[in-house]
Length: 77
Image (cartoon, rainbow, N blue to C red):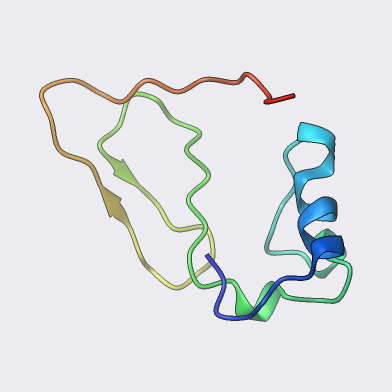
């Protein structure tokens, strides 16, 4: 989540044809929006209920339930 408006070109560059990129880097955007990144949950560990915020702002996501979440690596077409 960002605290700034993203352009269509920014969104296209972020999507990167479905290949993950590091949103904390200025090069991930058409015009640098890395300082406007408020929350960045990568969802890389499917065996946890606490998902760290990679933006550096400390917004940990706490999931509840009786079993860990299910993640998919499928890229929408």
